[in-house]
Image (cartoon, rainbow, N blue to C red; front, side, top):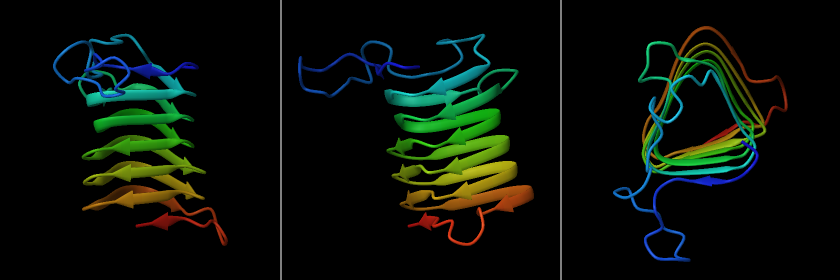
Length: 153
C-alpha cells in the first residue's frame, strides 16, 4: 500500500475517530482472501482487530510494514515478518513467523508483545510494552551487534 487506509466509518465528519460498528472496521481473511504478500508504505488505521493470516489455512508468505499500522489488536501469521515502521496496538501485537526482522522501527502496545518465531533479528528497534513481553524463539536471536541500540520499555 502506498496510500493511507482508514477502515471504519468516521463518527463525525472531520473528527478523525472511526466506528467499530459501522463500515469495514477490521481486517481478516474476508478482506483479502487470496493475499500472500502484504507490504505497507503508508498509514493503515484499523479500529477493530487486524488478523493477518492467522484465521486462514495458509499464512501469508510475507508481511512487511514500512509505514504506520494501528489497530485494536494485531495478529500476524506469516513466513516472513518485517517491521521498519511503526506498529501501534491498543491491546496486543501477536506475531507468528519463521523469520522476524525488526529494524529501525517501533512497536507500542497497550498490553502485550508476543513473538513466536524460528529466527528474530532486532536492530535500532524501540518497543514500548505495557504488560507482557513474550519471546518464543526456536533458533537464532540476533540483536545486530554492538551499538544496535535496541530499547524495550
